[in-house]
Amino acid sequence: MLTIEELKVEVGGREILKDVNMEVPSGETHILFGPNGSGKTSLMMTLMGFSGYKVTHGRITFKGEDITHMPIHERARLGIGISFQRPPTINGLKTRHIVDMAGRKRNGDGDVDVDALAVQLQFSEFLNRDVNHNFSGGEIKRSELLQLMAQGPDLVLLDEPESGVDLESIVLIGDTINTLLHRGTKHKGGPSHKAVSQARSKSALVITHTGHILDYITADKGQVLYNGVLCCSRNAREILKWIREYGYEECTRCTIF
Image 1 (spheres, rainbow, N blue to C red):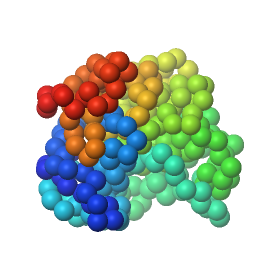
Image 2 (cartoon, helix red, strand yellow; image 1 turned 30 degrees about the horizontal axis):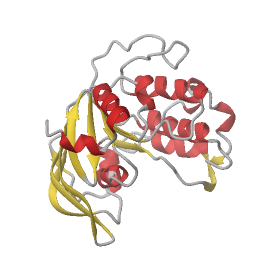
Image 3 (tube, rainbow, N blue to C red; image 1 turned 135 degrees about the vertical axis):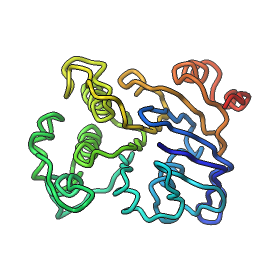
Image 4 (cartoon, rainbow, N blue to C red; image 1 turned 90 degrees about the horizontal axis):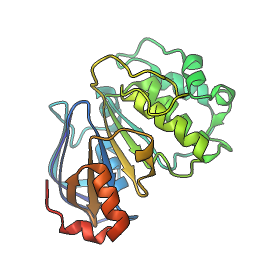
């Protein structure tokens, strides 16, 4: 699904990512750990194609197509979606309208049932409010996930989905992520109680600083980004246990790729 080869990225003339190599196969969810300032969000913004993140070396391939210098809207049409850690408030634009726009098919026609999706996320009362205006942390995350559910991307990029979220909301968010990725849910009461029968084809790269999201979603692999270098790759829960016991610096000793 996604291949990153020897990727180097500069922001404001400063090198942030250094020779990053990564593969996310179709149907797999990968967790990206790392301390604040390690380059996790920069990697995600680079993958989505945001300006200000200059690729100076390497290549990004998505579903076999080189997207290294492709604009954001073309990446979105190909099937990449993103949920931001701190998305902006958009005054004058109703949440219903942005979800409807996200749900239009990539060829420009066709709509999704916005109201039905909102019911799944317990978000109906927010549809006619401006995007993220006076939303709590949990409400912002649900708004982001609602847009992703409407878009239905093949690769989902999630930047700290547990950040600023209360316990009740994180259960719903975790279940929604699993549903979005065709994995069913880990908790009863989520958008879909039963595991989805269709073969998994959706992939995800999930950024986390604390690792709490692992209690609510199913991950296939974990990786650590430290000072712009991808330095460890193995079972996500093993990495989390190691980080809690020894800290991030000890992860640089791991050279398993």
